[in-house]
Structure formats: structure tokens, C-alpha cells
Length: 228
Image 1: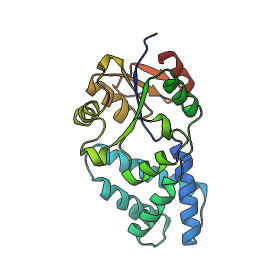
Image 2 (image 1 turned 30 degrees about the horizontal axis):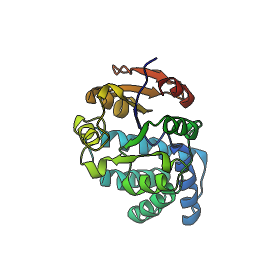
Image 3 (image 1 turned 180 degrees about the vertical axis):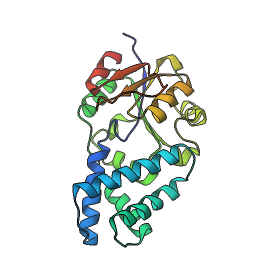
Image 4 (image 1 turned 90 degrees about the vertical axis):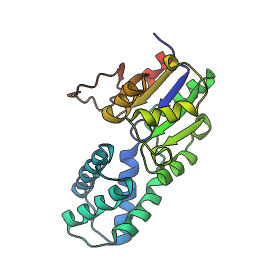
């Protein structure tokens, strides 16, 4: 099995349990605003949020528009009234505290570092949230650096995003770099566009109905041991 020297991890849904962080932050905000919370409301927000992120990744809206429009549409759907900008600001602070890890994330990161290899995070997430989550995480010391699309000015899966990343990491052959992510359109297509091997973290055993073909597919982070 091929071994790699540099591991580029997506953040949300790959290293960090975004679903748990999102649910926790939403519950806290609903309690703060004295809104009634339920699982169906949480699912409605998730549906709208995913739709807005998909639009962002297609360059249809900016990240700033995404943050406000998701709550505008969400509040309209559940028939509540609150200042969307204020809600978003407070929600992001709570979301940034949610540094819950995916099962196996700590152990895999430690294994990579123990073998003197490097870990970088590559994310389209919101800068303040990602920075807070990483800095308060138990894997912080394992991460050499993290790259957020807001700073770079381009995003996964664009080649320009990865050109920036390659220019700011240890000088190593692309043949020795592996990107790992749960999103076919952002992470796996991004790896293909960048000319590096890629690994789809498909922990929910989804069916790949796209034309995007990953180099590898895993259902558990522990499977990455074979590449270290």
C-alpha cells in the first residue's frame, strides 16, 4: 500500500464532528432566544444550511451572504422573528466551541505525527469558527497549519486554492500528498484538480452518484493507518 508524507484533512465532517457541534450550538441559541426547539426544526436548519453551502461552493453567493440568508430562510420557515446578523454572530461563537472529534481522529493524527509526517487542515469553513475550534482542540499540537478559503481568496475545489496551499507547506512531491475529506465536490474533486491522491471519508456509506471518482474510499478514519 502506498505511503504518504503530507496529509491534508478537511475539518468539518472529517476531523471534527460538525453535526454534533451544529446541533449543540443551535440548541443553545434557541434556549437563549426562548424559541421552541425540536429535532424537526434542527433537520430543517440542516437542510437549508447545506443548500446555502452548496450555493457558496458553486460561487452563487458569498460566504457573508450565506451566513445571513440561511437564517433569513430558516426563520421564515419556522415562523419566528429575530435579527439574523445578531443571531449568526452569537451562533458562530457557540459553533466555534464545538470541537468534538470524529471517532478515530485523535488516534490517526497522533499516528501520523509519531511517524514524523505532517498534517494540515484545508477548509472552506468560516474563519473565526474554524480557528476557535482548532485552537481549543486536543489535536491542535498535531496540526502544522490550517488553510481557510476566506484568507486565500479561493476555495476548494478550485486549483488556485491548492496552489496557495502547496506554496505554503513543506516542499514535497505531490505524489506524497493525500487529501482526506467527506465532501466529493469540495475535497475529492479538489484533490483531482490539484493533481494529488484523494481519499473519500464516507462514514455514512453514501452512494456515489457523481462522476467524481476518488483514489480511495474509507468508512472509518482508522483505515488511514495503511497510508501512514
